[in-house]
Length: 447
Image (cartoon, rainbow, N blue to C red; front, side):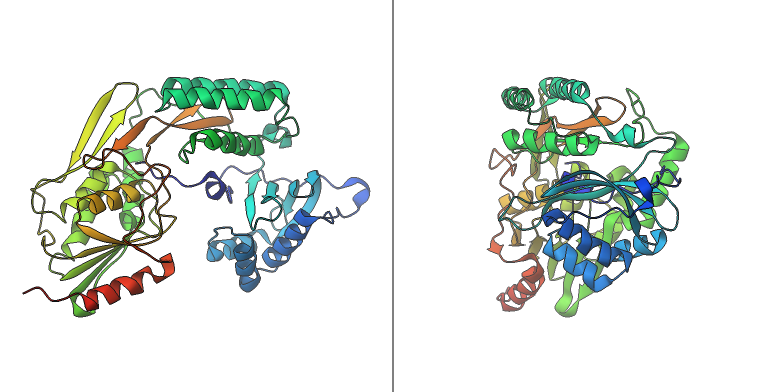
């Protein structure tokens, strides 16, 4: 499956290349803009105090309190680079939702922010992210009016009608969102990124499909080539980046008592990363037990799922099927009996560690091994996304990711969509490693 995460975390901090380095407008009369005295205003004050002071303890406490997944080191680096933020204007303020314009102290870069608290009585936030004003653009590039909202809705529905894996569900989504628009549910949304989030929420509310999402881009989305063939320079850059990242393989080691440990965070294309995957698996060929840590793995290529799994089976084994709606074709995935190097012995016990962040292709790997009774799954129920996605441009700023196929396990005749993979031993993700090591120690020795 394609690597995917929740749109709320994917858009958490959308700060990158192509920002506008320009001085922000001066507030009317030169007076400082006041943060609202409201629940969302209280959140803003906490964030600003922690971020502008580059206080790691306060930042960690803030993200924990509001249940936001953030890399503290990256946030601290961003705080030092920007010098913190100054509030320029409040574009929209409700008790639990805000849209505001900020200016980086060090660069003058103008940045737009949107945040919304979870419903009253619920902890955390629905979303919180920053988006720079597009290069050579303005805040108007981030806004939508009623006509554009209607056009985006119809264009998104057309893509779902044509491509979504379940046509009957696509029809239900269309009806639900059109009714929402007719009732005026989107009338108070004037920011493109917020509209994309809301459409995603409403489409997913019907489909329960976390892979389906509408995305917004500040910079204009380029036209996609009908057949994408990266040129040699692009391929070389991609390969170099994958090699720098070791193709997602973070840690491979043989621990005490000859227990192997493998942690990797995505399933890369085997055409690029197959050799690296083989090299890492070779380090574990002679272990007496193997722990595969997928607690931070967001998924990736089904072909790489099959490649890595092949090192756990001596014989050819049917892993998974992928059915595509438009072509009505089914592609089968099997282990490969002949691969470079030595495989892990069939009798070696395998333990897979999971979290609720374990996603997509990582779920397939886990689901396959569970159905084949090749591994003991330890940790949390996984994210529940089994549908690969294709991206479709709607206009210069909006696109939609549409699940176009579904996995069909040859043994269960279904998949993990919407349910996730339930562990054999259900424990908090943070405890999964200790539980696996204890089970290995307590496992009776084979004669």
